[in-house]
Image (cartoon, rainbow over all chains, first blue to last red):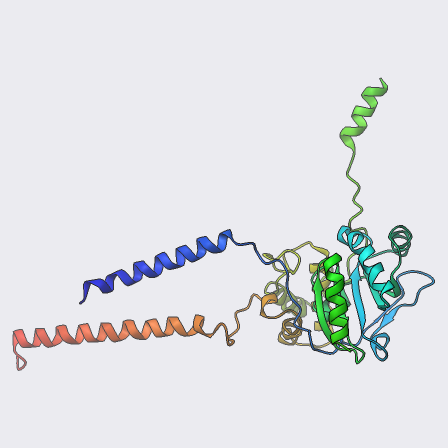
Length: 175
Length: 145
């Protein structure tokens, strides 16, 4: 048999070793993207997260303009960082519907008093049920929902200055 | 004396456990009454990935989100869903990534096909070599022996 053929297993091994070494130097992808993009928002109903504001159900997303669904929590630090940017989106006329995850009414109240309240309604999700329904794996996450109640875009992590324009664009696209 | 007391207090200070003071979901840490159903739940939970702590199964993880996923698994089993229905409900939302059970799909089929192919190649080589040797042996000893 041709001697050169014996090189093949070694070459394969070196290729895989090199690939493994290269992948070790790459950042691990921590985000798990939702597979629910372009899918209708599943049916759900969440009780109000605090007194004086309405809770959230799927029907709140149907009709009118596209909206943002913001999944957050008062115990989540990046949520503090994104608060001013959500405020800006609100000033741009965007309706933001909030879902507070594993949170207490007093804590929600306190958070809103400190960092502002950009929401029209806030539902309380004590057992991550809505998170699991939409394919969210952490807080905060922000979804663009069109007026027919379909999920159009997912933003994982806090909304930053540069995300505001992106979200406005996606809301425009969802018209 | 006061300094000593303060130092002592600082020693026993426990960092405020404010992160997660909510009670866990009802079925996060509570087993199902029916042992057969609970066994199904455990078997399924061992093959579902915790999304917050990505190298653990939801059966192994203490993350609140893993507890919430266990709650879903147990309540859905109680409601009469099959483990595979629950798995596909999660895969529909998070993709294959959420499941540790290998699935044959458009991206994973080579993982299943290549070992079979290699075995076939090995078998072919082996047959050819053995066949050749037998033919040589036969030639040496004489076929009609």
